[in-house]
Amino acid sequence: MLKALFPALVVCASAAAADPLSGTRAVFLESADGTRLQIATVEFDAAGGYAAEMTEAPFTDHFLSMRPFKCLEGPAKHWCHVPYPYEIARQVSDGDLVDLEYDFLFLWKGAAEYGINMWNGVYYKLETDGDRLVGRLHEIDMDILSAPPEAGDLRPVREIDLEAGDPDSHWLPVLVIE
Image 1: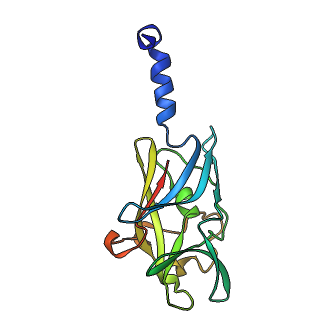
Image 2: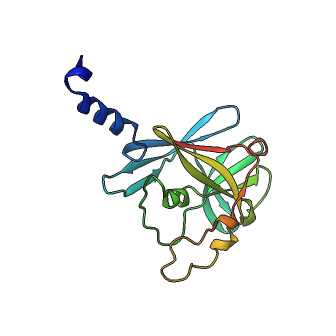
Image 3: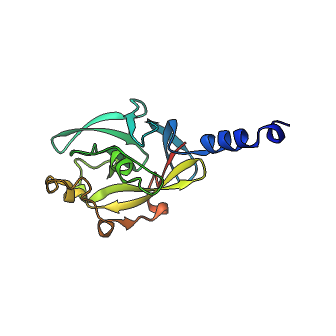
């Protein structure tokens, strides 16, 4: 009945509810068996900006290669968050989610290994999936981030730097923002 009386209102409310770049959203990492860990929240504003905040749990503190890391401890691999070390605009749009991808960089290490290897980088390439964002794991050598990018270049990671990861060979192959 509401739709018959106010069709524009119903369509507008449905579109707003389905916008994955609005409101406060939870960020999860998913294992291949569907187990989910909430790792952050993201709050989007009307101008395309956002603020991401990592959660304390389920991360544990590790001191690896002379640096502190927040890591998720898996049965065979640990997933360690790598805060992007340079300037970032924190602006997104329906066709441009790169800044958000930079906020969720990780590297993995074997659970029994000491130290880290920056070539074990994890980059989640995000896409819109209905009312949520889904990131698929890509592998990246994070050594490309060891030196600051050229002045004005806020996005030094190029498509050529990413290699689609095999979801069966990694503990947390999917990132979901919903």
